[in-house]
Image (tube, rainbow, N blue to C red; front, side):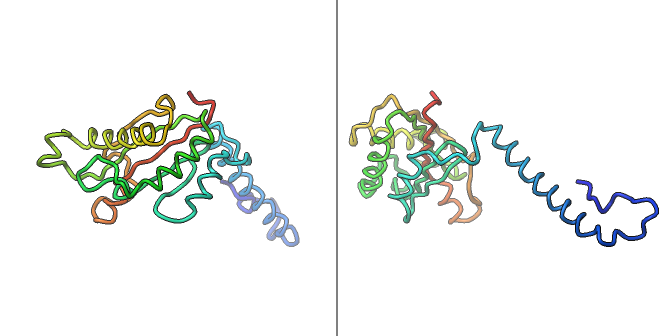
Length: 202
C-alpha cells in the first residue's frame, strides 16, 4: 500500500497544516483496504457480513453457552464441536450413555429446523491404530467415519431424527485444531463436528 506521505510534492519541504489531512486520508485508505478484504472473503462464501446469524445458531448458543460443546460459525454454516472423550471411551465407537443430555439438547434444536442438512464429521489425532482396534479399523479414516456414523445412528434411533437429513464424513488426522505433539493437543483433535448447512444447500 502506498502512503500519501510517500508521494513527493515538488517544491515543498514540509506538509505543514496539510499533514493532519494526509494522516486522515491514510487512515481512510487503510479502513477501505480492510473493508475490501472482508468483502472479498464474503464473496467467496456468498455470505453477507451484516446478515443476522442463522436462527439455529442462536438456539444452540442458548443451550450450550457453557461446557465442553463449542458452537461457532463458518459463514452461513453452523458448527457444533463435541470432544471425542465426551462421546466415546478410548478405542470405542459406541456413544457414551453420559452424552445423552448433549444429544437431547442437540436433537431438540435440530428438530426445530428440520430443513437443514447436517454433515457429521469425525476427527482423530495422528496416532496410528494398533492391536484390536487396527484389526477392526485399518486406519484413522475408518475410525473417524465410524464414530461419525455412530453419532448419526444415535440421533436417528434414539431421538427420532430423519436419517435423510444427515451425511457422514471422516477426516482422520488431517484437519487438526491443535498440536499433536502434546497430550492436550491430541485430545483436542479427537472430536466430532456437526456442520449444519444452510437450508438452500442440498
